[in-house]
Length: 377
Image (cartoon, rainbow, N blue to C red; front, top):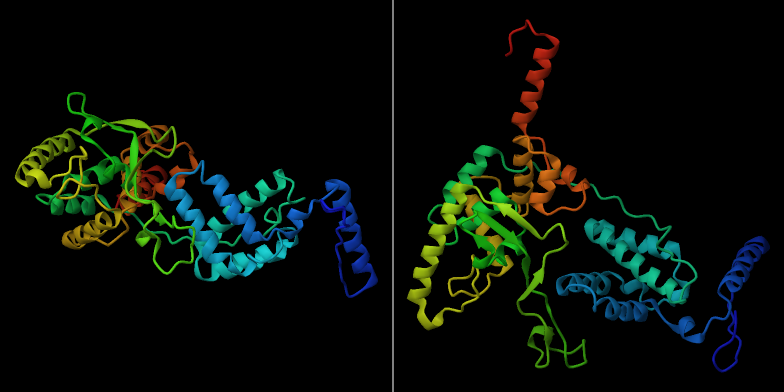
């Protein structure tokens, strides 16, 4: 299979139960040799784990910190059984087995892991480290999605009523009426709101990526957050996910009035805090002006759902609710995409749900169309 840099031949060995099986494997090696030619020794010795670590460094220059943290966590959590395997010996069956094991406990993680491995292997192919990507023909685990209906109109009203008088109460009106993502809402600043034109410009999102070791020893006893030379972490204000996500929204008059009152309350709170206030010009900060932690924000949402007596759906389902309410109001799909910052129309079917009143209305219309003389129930 070629020679090393020192001129020594690179040999590959195959085994099989029959002569025919061995002959087929030898033919495959000869075909690989014909396509790739000389195969330098580094790629023969490079393990999957070493390549994934190198690939993470490569893509870390172009990915957002939070995205990079997710990639790193998935790779280092689930790829352990294959990390010591030589990169050139990773087969489709190995990928299938790995994804199957992960999918048994973490179905969504298996899908994300397949995308990451496929991208890493594609980079290896482009750099001549692999002839073909074994992830291309791997069997992607099927994930059964749990269908949860978003909040109905009456439940939304109960949520908004329960939020009245709460600190940052307008935050939940923004979630349900405008459908902003959590990071977009927590990263909203006062100069993003035009009170005269009654508009909000969505330009950034607040992210809190994890800390990384800076001491050069990932296996050190202390956690990355306790490393004296730690890197990354802290609060980051990143651009929104895509060009479609950078948008200007018209704000309902009632919500705009809530934001005016919220600004007056925040000014009084800042005055009372004095030097303890940290000015970041955020619309929905912590009581001291610092950025609000996403987990604290999510906990406040769960508390609100209990107070309103509605099902404790995840905060992100407020965004599903906004999309569904726009559908119920007959808003065109292209307008919904622009309001929610989508670039793919497929997200309409994922986020818009058909509520029970909409089903009953459809049945009543069919009833009148087929049996116009019959009395509706």
